[in-house]
Image 1 (cartoon, rainbow, N blue to C red):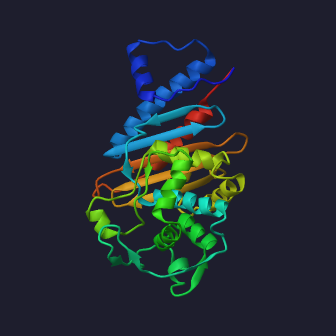
Image 2: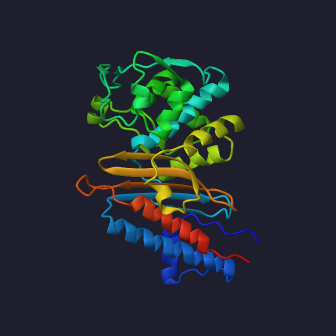
Length: 311
């Protein structure tokens, strides 16, 4: 008998507390129901302990088909998770044959604001990736830029690829894949746009949908999906979702950090089971700092799955 599918944990927890609705009596249902109620309570505890202003979670498990969410349609500043949408846009063009992975791209630090069309430059001293800005005045391939954009979150690589594929094409890629909950307006460090309130935004559900089409091999083609997955598996920042998992776990993911948000969105691979998709978005006051909330939620999800029992 297949596992039940629950998507609204808050309603379910409320019904359980008020005894307004009983789940069918079976070990499988009892295990899932008890675990999801426990998850909901633990999430509230983590949110309070880390003094989070907002927390959004979206989870889908290919093994059990359980889907679980908390505040998953709330929009957050995307930070670097928007780079997943850029990756989708790049591979749309590759799949269409209008761009090749080995296409050369001139590396320069000059971009145009979407607000006033004035040029701006990135602060290369704060960019995480010398592998890209060390090639200023030279060329790197689309493949190399996509790799550094995801694995080391290079802002320079991101803006170069945004210029290559265009924001319009990125949004069209999302539309074609029926991914809502992800809004990409611009590249990164466009200060004039930021001051005008024009920011990239994501929801936990939106990022989960994006990761699922990649995990399912449906992001334009199996080959494109596999190529994106390989890049994401080489992610070098592991203080989020991976920090809450056993060392043997493999995670294809993308982090996102600014002074008031810490996000992670990934596909988790564990030996002996199908993967699961997990997105954790957090927002906090700048003076609070990011803490370990993302890792704590990741650990709680993993422990919950490990504790499930089925007939």
